[in-house]
Image 1 (cartoon, rainbow, N blue to C red):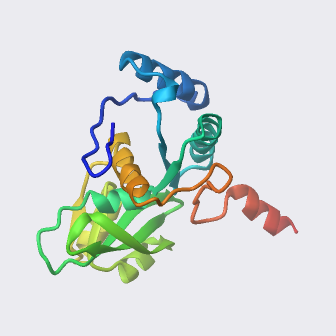
Image 2 (image 1 turned 90 degrees about the horizontal axis):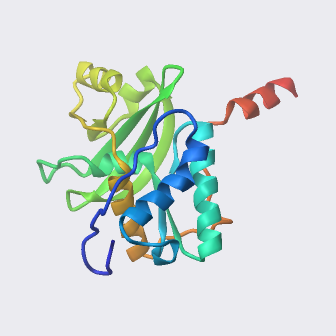
Image 3 (image 1 turned 135 degrees about the horizontal axis):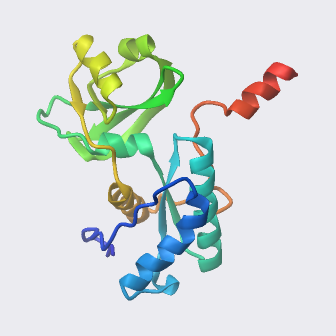
Length: 212
């Protein structure tokens, strides 16, 4: 429940457990609304993680939000998971003006997002760039305060003498608050414009290229 020029209050969170996310997602949304005494007609917008992440997970989440937003004629705010990580940083010094958010990407690689802070406020960051690096490249290219929920990345950063904060992985409420901020700023996308941000090519694209 987020009113303009006010705070964003999280009314409830529903966790998806097990591997059948596609079968659970919409029923869980309906159950959550019912428990709050709300209906689909009360929804005024959607916040969704557009990436980076697994191909299957992103595809399921984005397809559901596209369908709901189109049917209900409501706006979508696309949130980068790296942006959500950066927004969880605790800024202890006014000298911190760059945050590097980092996430495990598999295959020994690391997703990074570099963000500029607004007057040392991690709640309002603007993206400089997002990239995919191998471990050593991450150490060489990460700047400012490094923020990550992943232990391996935190150890790499500490070993390299980086200023590091290890946080909990952002939950749905963190995504909702960032989405609300984007809605207030009218930074929205239509269902047709909403796309996954994989940062790297999918396995299918890599195989297609190698076979051509």
